Image (cartoon, rainbow, N blue to C red; front, side, top):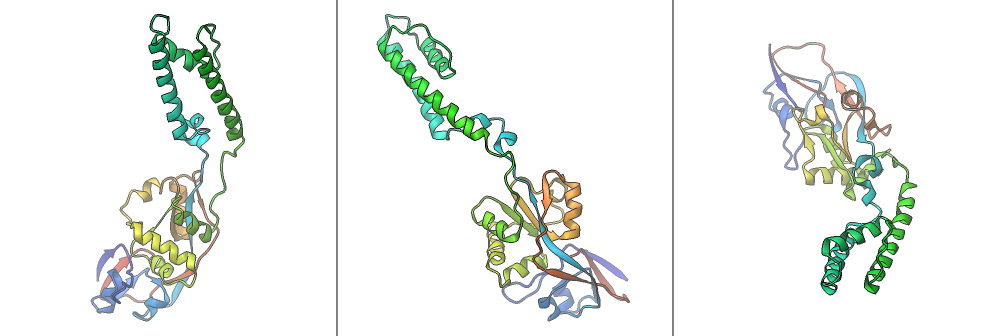
Length: 279
């Protein structure tokens, strides 16, 4: 007997042709395929032996983390980037204006710059000879008070937000661009989503197809994880193993199930055989 390894069972393209193992079975170029997921579409193309098990299809998703724990610059979060740009320009331009107007005084650029910077840090300044400087210090005080108020509000936010629990939430997060979603290339899961009666499954597949979020077994994702703000759809038993390999503290396997897929077995083997993984 001759054994050949293929990494996917095959999917039905839009032109009506199968790929991978299924096209070889359809053309009768091989006798038996192992561990090919049994679906209604595939049942119309090839004959399956008695199924020996059922597998839930769900997803594993990275747990969301707060910027307080995931970023080294969390203290910049109370203000948006354009506000920080304004503050930086305020320090530079004000220091330049004061040093230009008071050339004969001690208002050197660097000295004035650090004086204003110190005022933002609530450091006292004893030199109030300039009315303009006093006004700028008042502005610095207002900026500091606003930052302090926003920082206190920001610190009250929970460290971890809610994890995505079901496929509807996952589909919505993917459409909003907050999450990526992957599926194994050549898997029957993708085509099942494409032909699903439920809109959130179809929208989920459209996003995966548009962004080419299809993975091969050789990809680093299987060893290192899907990364932040990402989900991976597969059979439950595979996801449990991946969760242990990646980091059970950083990922969570959803309890939501979208469908059942039956796995086929065979009692007698002869001729050419292609051995594939569960798809």
